[in-house]
Each structure stands twice: as C-alpha cells, then as structure tokens.
Image (cartoon, rainbow, N blue to C red):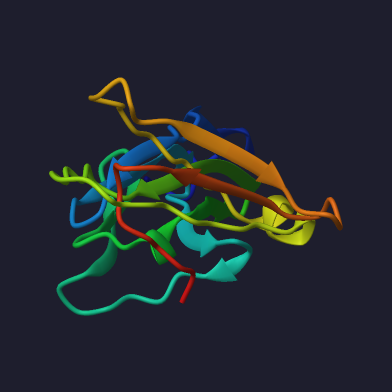
Length: 169
C-alpha cells in the first residue's frame, strides 16, 4: 500500500471464531485453531495453562495459517490435557480465545473374573483432576460397591468379579 493512501482507520484486529474444545483419546492427534485476522497481520502466541507452549519436534508444533494459526499435538498423552489459549497481537491491540483439550484413556476390555478396581481421591485431587470410570456389568452376579472411608475425604469403589486392580502410581 502506498504510504500516501494509508489511513490509520485501516488498522484492525478481529477474532473470527472462538476456539473449540476437544475431547479425544491417547495416541491421537489434536489440532487447535486460532481464527484471527488483522491489519497489520497479527502475531500469535500459544499458551497451555497460562505458560508458553513449547514445541517438540514431530510432536507439538504451531504455525501461521491463512486464517491465523494452528497448534498440532501428535501422539496425545493425558498430560496434554489443559486449557489452551491463543493470543493474537498487532499494533491495533490484542485478542485471545481459549479452548480445553481433554485427553482420555482409550477403551479397555478384559475377560475373566476375580477382578477388582480400587481408587481413591481426596478433595484436593477432585479440584484439580478429572476422572472418568466407565464399565459394563456382563453377569448378574457382578456388583459395584462404593464405600466412603471414615474421614469422609476419600471414597473407595470396587467392582467385584470384573476388572483388575489399578492403584495410583
């Protein structure tokens, strides 16, 4: 653009669409899109839980696109779960959008009997972690029991004759 025809009113920065939340499974790939436009072209920063996203060769990368920026995470792990934010800035200002990436464990099928699941969670864990347990009972003799321990801060659950024992690492 010729400097004599440039006008400060031509400056703008716009969030074109909010970031989507994504729920996916271990080992999959997630793409988070930052749809922004502006004049001059904005620069985009990516944050996870308020800290800069660190690129890892062949696993975590971000790049500019015609619509703004794309963050791609391959071979997802549960530790990739978090709040992701893109922050776009130019001389006009700053816009941002946030989405949640939730990486869940895949399906597990076990056959046989004599299995139990044991888990515990205290109140501080509940505030900072999501835990989903899903099961199907295939035989009438199987039962699910929930027990709250005496201090009331821990609940223990077991599924008799169905799943193996899992203890937190």
